[in-house]
Length: 347
Image (cartoon, rainbow, N blue to C red):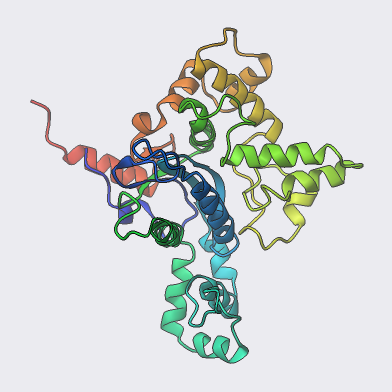
């Protein structure tokens, strides 16, 4: 079945969750060790991680998870048009200025916008509305992520031409089970690729960021302080919190590092790490044993059997194709159903 048009799945006025992927041109290791020359480009993974954190504080998108590998990247995002709609005109102008400034410093960084420039840009009502829509668009988010990395990579190699394969792929996630399975698929990517042997060793992944803050929170003297260090930590404070039922600190504290404090899956960080540990052991196949009781209860919460869960995580892209989840009567499902009905019958 051909890929669906993004306009058929993406609804500008709806909160939606997407799994976004992009590959280096010809699947070459432009962010790892080049097999031909032996040159190491792993430092570019840090560029991508830094750019993701910058965009998290600008766009009306919640970044739920990410993984940067040697020849491709994964990002799980939730669009937040409701938040962008609540921004003032000056907020929209200042955020857009950080992406596309009309003036730059000698270091090519965005110059500080002046009050007169803010007023002038706010007067352009048509342009202002366009900017507001783009600040919650996955297409503009990926453009602002991929293009600067490509330019910087080409300067690094003193070459021109494509860095990324081309059009990024978008897969809509329709329910909490699909979101949880996708996050696990993304966070376990380095382990599946043989680039890491444990979650703590999985560099440039969202789970590594969260584990770093979890370790740092152990030094807290009060439960409230510990919760704050976990929800707004130095490493993962720009990522969306995991739990859909956060404590008071994460849900009330105002932050400029991310669009909102809204969680994304029906479990705590500790429960998610337990589930990932068990899943990773099964996928590596080098450790025997049954699923522990705590992980079994989490799968019951997701209404997912052990075999189904492993199939989801191991073959997420192949199992779900363009859309993942069980919800019905959504725009994406209607489009998928309509396209399947119009496909010619197999001979």
